[in-house]
Length: 246
Image (cartoon, rainbow, N blue to C red; front, side, top):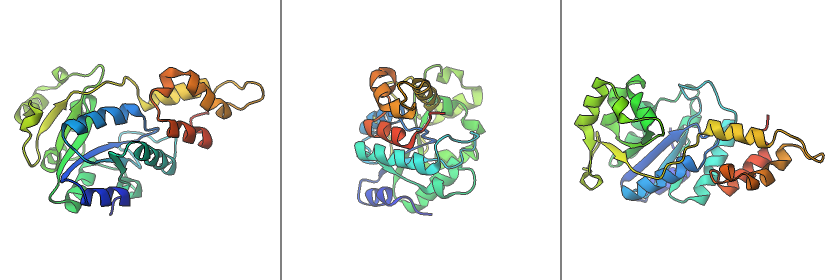
């Protein structure tokens, strides 16, 4: 199963370090992109694959279709060249498990050093992931802080895993995999769920015979708490597709 050509071609022609960020991306926002870009620069990554999940194992579904979510990811990649789309999970007709995706990427780029981006909330639930023991054989875990979550909440088993694999100095990251890196970056206290709710709220009232979705662009301009989290081209796409209005 091949990745989107933009990811494949860029990875084959760039350095051997590959960053990987998966998610529902419903919608993709700067809370996904800006911290990842900041950390990628610290790790000297030249490319980060964005992996929209088709059927997330831990979620019941998405609002935007797979086609709409991948379109928004492509728009993000246009605005921020560090990122490129990897669409392999969208081609699956079953739940997307991280270990399967990382196995495919490792086979496709066998000489690469891989860095998988997760939040602290995901690290704390690591032991519930499908074949979680294999993840550190396939990648390094790059962990970002999340409001309300701390490694102090890890149980004894996870705390021992962290202690065994943690790299405390980003300059001392070795070749290969199996390292856990706690990265510092700017924090965006927003989620896609909160953005969808906010988008629905600002488009919930019809004014002057203008439909809610037709008001969206103007409302987002006025709503700083929304516009600061969404790229302008994605705002335009959401308006054109009339997403998150109902």
